[in-house]
Length: 163
Image (cartoon, rainbow, N blue to C red):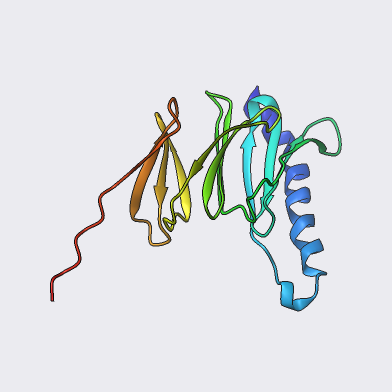
């Protein structure tokens, strides 16, 4: 049932996702195209969209016509969104900014917790059973954030060679 719903609404979602970059292409050249970060929640008929240059996340209700924006996260001190991951089982949206990971209630985007990154170069998140894993741009695991305590645990960095 859910799969058929998503299949039926996918053209509308694709149209929305196509329109955003096309509108961004109309911006002056020095601003360039920004990457759109998207997470879907088919069970709730929601999609979350963030622009990497803007610190806020939009939540849209899809189905039954045009998408309707139901929530907008406040950007707080977040100047950009680098990645986002939806933990549907816990109802959490994990949002990676440049200096923190913000954990939002997915149904209304209320901020639940901010986890500082302490100048780590986290570039991506991956959802795991017990929280999220944090990776650098090369794909190396940097650490994890536990979903229940929402505290970062960092991997030890290899020692620099003496010399």
